[in-house]
Image (cartoon, rainbow over all chains, first blue to last red; front, side):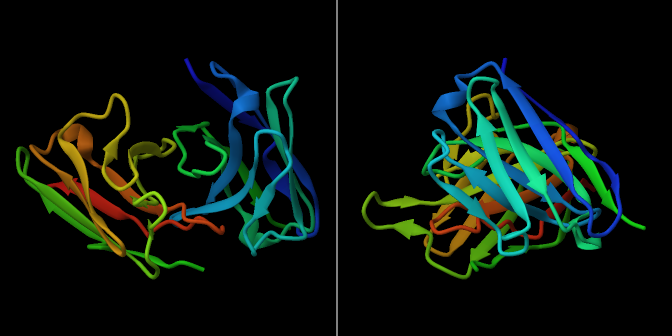
Length: 119
Length: 114
């Protein structure tokens, strides 16, 4: 059974940092791209970032470029999202999601972790 | 960025009837080299993560009931749910995955039972 489990969310002040993690099981992690997708309260889904299977390609939404960094550890079956210079508009549930390297539809999702940016 | 626009924003359909949700892309999602449309549909029930229903505009994900079907090409797409069941109450999203990123979603269509 494919499982994705996010962690690391919480309350942080504007300008602060958080590091999200997503541990996966049930598939060969090193064969798939991984992504972060977020959803602010009552809003549409927003793709945030993606990373290829071998970490040789990373992609970012303009809204987070230069502030967020995606990375992965294929030995630990884990993908990370380092979030710096956080803003109120980054408040959302953050999901990790699995995709193919060149076909970024998301066939498995975690349950999400809530990030709240507020003073 | 590619803008994905869904219609309607909300929809109420009787049990056993058909629900139709539309999605329009601001760019052509048909890639001529492989003749595939880079369009997916998701179902999100309250308090849950999204679930993939359809990819390549019309390919049903494994385990998805055949009541769900996708159609369309280029810039205009449709998700059809036949024989609506109570468990189909959800918000439905379309998403493009045509390179380059960002891979944007529609605003969502809320489906309820009439």
